Length: 198
Image (cartoon, rainbow, N blue to C red; front, side, top):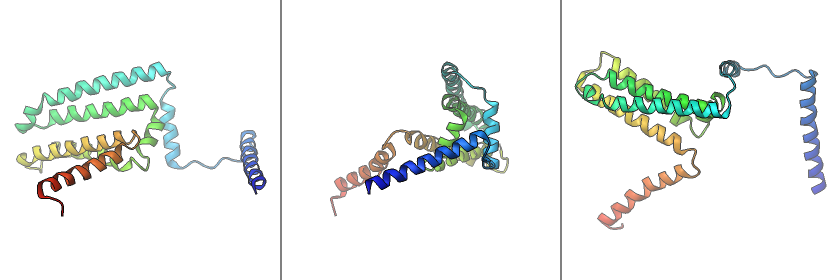
């Protein structure tokens, strides 16, 4: 049985190698690319090949600009509370966009997009981008009463922050499991201490 398994593995390996060879010499046509793959190749083609030093430099620059914009947004909190949300929202959103651009520098646009829309991160990514959109919508849509606008903006920013945190900890092994365990276990223990076990 072992010899048969080895033979099967060797046959499939040789078959894959032969297919790769046929494709390389033009005997086998490549599968046509989907529209999404063509768009991805076009976007990646616009990005020049960067050295490691250039990637790190781009990331650090974007991170610094993002940090300055975020600090600048918090200096405009008074304007937000007074009913002028535009300066705060614009600075805060631009800070987040610069942070995303920085991550594109670090790992490359294609790799970063694949990571962002991976099965384990797509909900966090969607919520993050949706809350960025809703933050801008709430800030600039005239149909929302000024009294409710501030609360909605703060709520959108809070969910935006949570989505980014959930996305970030997905890169740390078992971090999400640990956070879920803490969030579920700690309140239960506190309730048992206060009210006794049932």
